[in-house]
Image 1 (cartoon, helix red, strand yellow):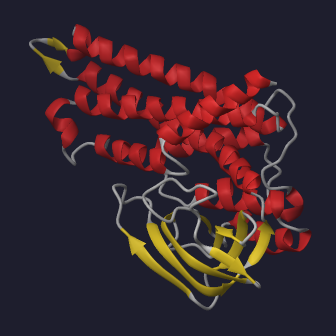
Image 2: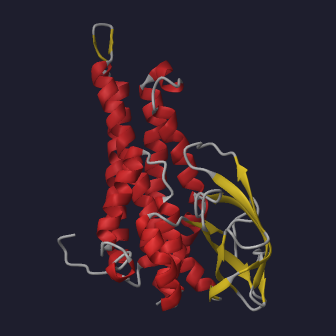
Length: 320
């Protein structure tokens, strides 16, 4: 925040607070730390970014103030099957102002007012805006591992849609920008798990002494700390790239996404182990962080997908 970056998440002219992307990263980290059960990420990281970057002024005036105030909730509808969405396998179709197809596992899809949908218009895959109140939109709630964040399948049957763009590279750019913010959520959750494990280990006594003095527990906490600090460094790299719109954004986004996913998995898993048998019960919040860890790891693409993106971006950089 003190480095002088001026890029804004939602400009004041559209009802926002004029927050910079660095401030937004701080907010994302705290949302992850507290396991906030809110649709903030769906509305801000994805829906807002799509309209802000690819919508015209009339769309910005119509939707961004609502997203900023919380009166409107946005959701990103991208996946159609258990395989990773690609430009070649998006079957949702757009033609003559209408959109037809099915999307699954849409985070906050059951409570969203606005959907940002990836669809094929015959010449390419791009982003389209659909209101949940449009005719032909059918929403069915889906159960997932994390009950604190709702999911839904969405069926569009000749539903009225507005084209934002028809370029697959812009879809990838949207995912890269969101990946940085999701990484900060994962970082906050990972650090919360580490702190929980440390606090429990220092207060839990066995054989006359704190279990934090046992070498096996020390190793777990040390590994968690290393994972968190490595993820933090990579997340700062992502925050810099996002706030400056740097050409390195694809590489930075993939780097922080992979690192934060690994850190959150390590910390949420070892937090349960540090708590011992009690860590597997509903008496502690350990399982809530593990559930959120798995949900965030699958959102906007699995860790394997982002590893592939990282390798691809590094290969392209070496060819320049």
